[in-house]
Structures are given as C-alpha cells and as structure tokens.
Image 1 (cartoon, rainbow, N blue to C red):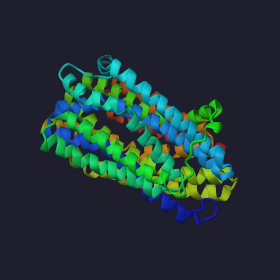
Image 2 (image 1 turned 135 degrees about the vertical axis):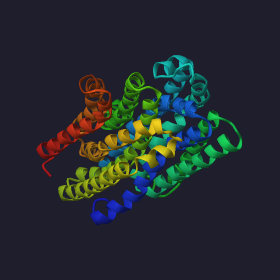
Image 3 (image 1 turned 30 degrees about the vertical axis):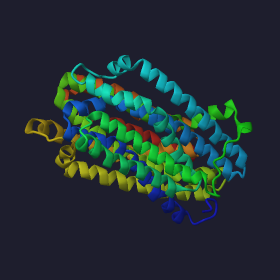
Image 4 (image 1 turned 90 degrees about the vertical axis):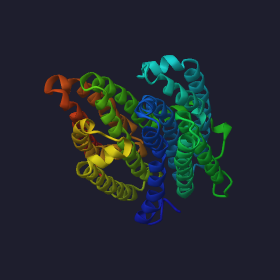
Length: 436
C-alpha cells in the first residue's frame, strides 16, 4: 500500500475493516467476562468486575497513550521520508511502556486493598474483587503492550495482522472464560486468567509482523529523546484521557445511582456501560482508521487527500452512530437480558434508562472521531478539549446538577446533554480552525 498515492476510498476501506475488527474485538476482553460472570456466577461477582473496570481503563489508556501518540508521529515522519526519526518514536514508546508496566504492578499489588476500596469495592463483593484483581494487576505489562502494539503494527501497514492478533486473543478469551468458569468451576479468577491468556496470544501474533521484511518498527536507541517523549504524551493524551475519564465517570455514576436508586440503578448503568464499550470501540476504530492515512498525507502536505479521508471517516461515523442508537431505542430489553436475567422491577428502571442514554451515542461517535482527527493533523489541543468536555467537565457536573434540579430520573439525561454540547464545540472548532 502506498498511503501517499493509492486511491483514497480503496485505502480507507482496506484500513477500516481490520481496524474496526481489532478495536471491536478488544471490548470482548471485558464483555465476555461480564456476560459469563453475570450469568454463571452471580450479580455480586459481576459488580466486582464493574468495580475493577477503572484498572482496565488505566492499562488500555496507557497503551493508547503510547500507541496512538507514538504511531501518529511515526506515520507523519514516514510521510516526510524520515524513517529513523519515525523509529525513534517507536523506541520511546516501548521504553515508556516498560516503565509504566513496572510502576503499575508495584503500586497496585502493594496498595491493592486501599485502591479497590477507593474505587468502590464494598464488604459484600471484596472477596470477588481480590480474586480477579490480583491476577489483573499482575498482567499490567500484557495489557499495556497489547494495546500499544496493536496500533503500531496497524500503522506500519499491517492492519490485517493487527486485526488477527486482537481477534485471536478475544476469541480465546471467550472460549477460556466459559471453560474456566463453567467447565472447571474456577470462579471469577478463571475469568481473569482467561483474559491474560488472550493477551498473550494477541502479543504472539503481533510478533509475526516484526519477522516480516516490511517491518519498520525497529528500536533505535540513538533516536531516543525526552523531546520525543513529550510529543508522544501530548499527541496521545486525549486517548488516555478518554479511558481515564470514563473510569472516573463510572465511579461518579455509581455513587449517585447507589444513593438515588439503589442496587438496581447501578445494575442498569452497568448494562449501559458495557454497551458503551462496543460503541467506544467502533468510534475509536473509525478514528484510528483515518489517523495514519491523514497523518502521513498531512506530513506530505497533501491537503486534497486529507480532506478526502476526513469525509470518508466522518460519513462512516455518522452511519455507525445512527445504527447503534436505533438498536437501543428499538430493542432495549434484548440489551438488558444479554447481561442479566432481569425481573420486572429491574426492567422498569433499565429499559427507559437505556432508551434515554443511547441517544448520547448519536453524538458520541462523531465527537470521538473529531478528537482523533485533530490528533492526526497535530492539533491535539482541540482533541483534548473535546475529551475534557465530554469525559469529565460536563458529565461530572451534570451527574450531580441534573438530579438536584430535575429529579432522580434526569440522571439518565446527563450524557445526552454532555455529548450534544461537546459535538457542537467539535464542529465549531473544525470549521474555524481547519476550514475543510
């Protein structure tokens, strides 16, 4: 593939399918655990998994910080025909991944009980949290490198290998989840072990790319610099912030729903949040599809091709947002029953909540896409503003403000309102700053 000269539409779709496949299958690591644990163990075990979601977000967010941040800069350097400079960004990303992995393992394992209590673990689920959490914390390097290398391998012209790695790991995770939890009766720890084995398999397949003749992902120690590190962090921070802010938002919602509605409110939100994993994966898939294409052509100063790739990606994002929103509006009970055996009391709360909350997906997909686009054209400031607005500031304020002003049920309108305001800002920034 020649990113700078091949037909734009053909290139876009050659990247789109494997990239969306890779990002979508990534969500299975958590979804498979949630569904199988919820149905074959009990609701407390599923609640424990939900409490540990912020740790998943920390690992994946760090991987995306280094993977997206480093690979976008690498692609731009390759577009400028500066190959060793691009490899320098890969070198710095790998070094940072090692440091973060060791740091997270030490902190999480030594301060485990304090940390899980801080993020919501209660006495009735703490045993389940410990069984899953210690295994999860020990696997920090696997999660971080898996998320990071998935992006680098894809952006080094091997989207099919990236997709194969994620798919193999995801499928293995689903099979082993059922085998360990149901077949071998290993409980929630079996789910954690299955997830780690899935990561190992993914990493093994990514390694195939490093053996190919087309591989440009090479360690160049002479290109290491703290300047490159700062640029990687600046470029990739919006992706990291998306993951971390989502973790914070989950905690805030759980606190409010537990206080206002009780356990059933938290359960309903857990179903919605697991659905959001899929939507977020689709959104990131479209954004990550255009990032290497736009970044390389932006580096080559080919504005016409940048505009063409942007339009193809934005149209795809719009189509996805309409489809996922309609699913939530038409079949909310199917979504609910996928995760739990809901009684009428839970249905009365969850069904309208799903319908309201899913409206936010109509705007969220496009907002995430615009955030990724601003990264690709080296305008990460606007990407960061989008992430902060939707992921923390607006949602964090509204989750407390709405119930106080409009009553308990208004808590479900928090994200539609936050996403709408964020998208309007993203469109404004696009028209004023980029002028496509």
